[in-house]
Image (tube, rainbow, N blue to C red; front, side, top):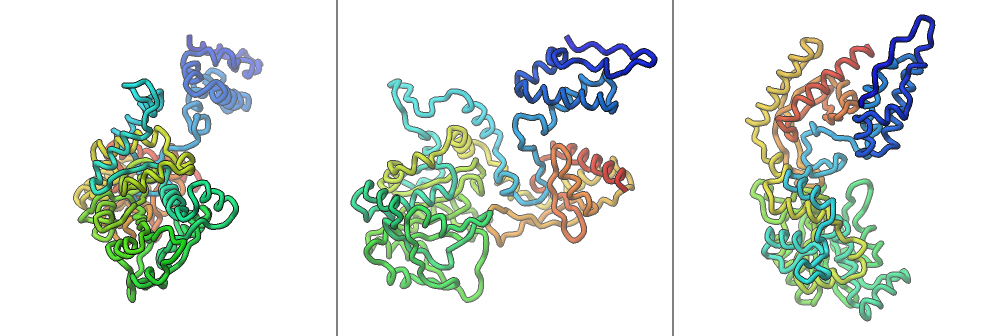
Length: 475
């Protein structure tokens, strides 16, 4: 039964005596249900916070129960501290917001995989099965040019595993390779162009990542020009692989040259070393809308032995690293000891498979949205915001240029439309629940509609209205 409303205190009586006890509140059906779902400690903390408000006379005793229920639904008392964010930045693959949002099919797959599943169980024999078989098959269906595929936990892991396993092949067997790495000496080398020695997010540099595996990098060419002959001159004993890295988060223009995948494949074959191509953003096949973005199919058809990439960028799936290519090399990576540390979990495998087999993922939908659709969304949002706040704040529709983000297609603009508010709404919108993340540009807070769904617009409107109330109270 719900907690009964307290009797009004008698004249001169301390109202705090009527604050419901914690055990009474925990027995309330609504709070008991929340305790079962979120855990009793969090609900008890929410109850304590509501009781404290009543002790300070900021809340009437009879309102403690409803306030506790309200607090138990807020991020502060939620089981996870991650907050839902509405992406109004116009950046499709926003690393700080978790990169690719999952499709409905992927979300359903994650929910189903959260319980017991046949992850490594062979239903026919009742014995151990092959981990990730469905996800690997889905990757191969999306990239038939690959003989085999392997899924690990992110793109950096895919590259680390590839160079460690391949560059260590010159040692006397796997045991010798691992012993050499543990002793601090490189078991082999990889050739990398100086122009591809890139730094990725949060200050991590791919050269540091590679050398941390015990593999030594030999730089070839110069920052702006690296030719086939530079690789040929550097090849020699101890070289375990040629590595070509797509500098996905910047563009080098002007007096430049680089060896193509086809050229490097010829060099690699003539010296019997594998060619590994890291394409970064995860396109499995060429996209005419992104003509300069490399894809796995084209790289393999041009002669790459292995291709590595991320699963949560242009592919539109969960955080994952994909390795595609020659079956013998993929099997070598699969059997390497590091694969155990890098393997993907059941949730990522389920989401990846559903992303590839299911409908078009949101990343693809958002980056392909037309100007007409974006203008319509901006007009709806602007009209609803104006209806809520009246003429208290100026609201305008302005052109906006989004980006793919996540290191994908850095030179490709995504023209669209945004609703412009005063700049001080930017930080204020981030205080709400759900938080709304916008761009502040040239003195305006821009609500870019590219990554917003029609059904999310009322939440954005409410967030703007709440921000207007807070800003008005502070002025």
